[in-house]
Image (cartoon, rainbow, N blue to C red; front, side, top):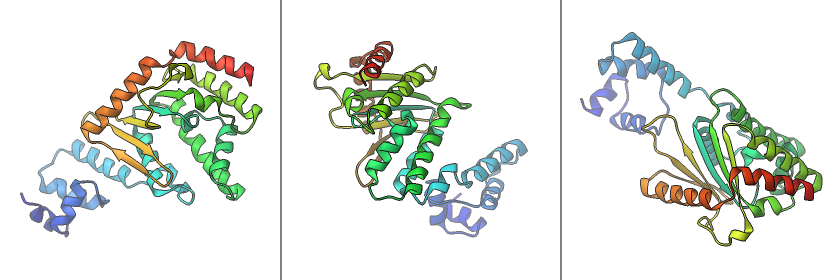
Length: 259
């Protein structure tokens, strides 16, 4: 069956079918229903399951209510993060957003949005804290974070904020689905000198991993096998060379006492 034939059934063009199949445009539930009939999908259970997926795909995610303070390129990331089963991240400038305390998040956001109104700052903080709720909710993802020691030594928001952040990290490290490691200064140069990145893995076997690399004005999303493999090798090397999770908790305790 040609795309032209399929397009005719849903009163659309051949290119519309192509864009639907590639996930580049949204679709109506009615179109999915018509296409299932055309493709001979007659089992009621299977039809109901696919139509439910269509409804869910067209339902805006909870993060869309923050669209006035959320850049479009980051909305994509939040949606991917919400679906991920495994999140691996390396940070060298700040504590990762999923592990930030309330006070630390507010200090980081205020520093990066100088001149923003207080209500906008609070919206951004609320968004960050709501992202964190999934770590302790049902079907929580696995989070594996490697933090450069510099991210922990850099004073953000003052001593009280840093103490709260260290306490929060120690608490988060005790969760069964969270692993935290520190890449210490004493190790010297290491595999991830190129900068921070995250790797997202999804529960669906046929979906590729996605590498997220952020910059000042946007982000790159990499899913080509060669690119992903390069970042996976770097992450594996980081995990081997960094302090163990147990030693990391001890070091966080030392930093808390020093703060």
